[in-house]
Length: 251
Image 1 (cartoon, rainbow, N blue to C red):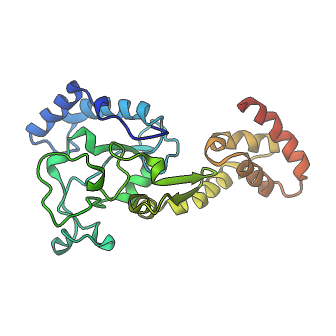
Image 2: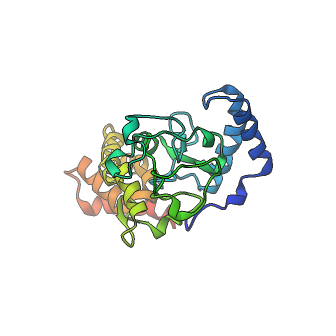
Image 3: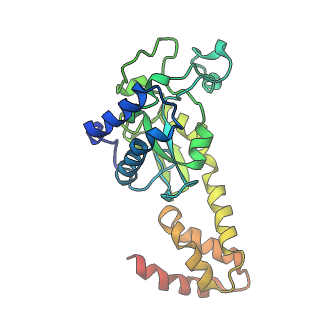
């Protein structure tokens, strides 16, 4: 997925049948009877998304509280019914919902908790004035969003230094994801995370070790800056020398 969208074919007939059984039994999403289907889907998406959130593309941990399954089209009604059919960006958190797609596997994406919470009930169907119907649509123009099965992520969003998100080719879908999931705040989030990690570090080496998990996302300069901020009385040359020892492990 790092270089494009997911294949629709990765959702097997067996998995589809499991979700259909849950839907046919009129179960709600939180029902434990659907746990097997959700567990299998989560395993597939975790592998196919390379362990990354569908929206911010940061690494996610396969642990409760860190990773969530997002309904791309929200499953339930929310907000003022008078706004449900509006296509104004500011009205899109009000939605009639799409209960018919609650257990449609292609409507489900693996995300980090932060992005799922920020997205909430945002309704990304391009033209909400038209009825949705009961057949799930894969036409890329149907969504004003970056849908993991219909859009190539990097055709819409560019990530610079792992922290800065920019719209590609004036993509309205890319703009929606960046705005709704507040990806412009990621740099500050990662900086705060780094500061917290090194808060009690007693040496440069320990601080660097604590920040290694952020190297792939943010790069070595980010680590250098965070360690330098923690140890302002240690020369940049000394810090860089210590970082070089770790850098060699990533080559």
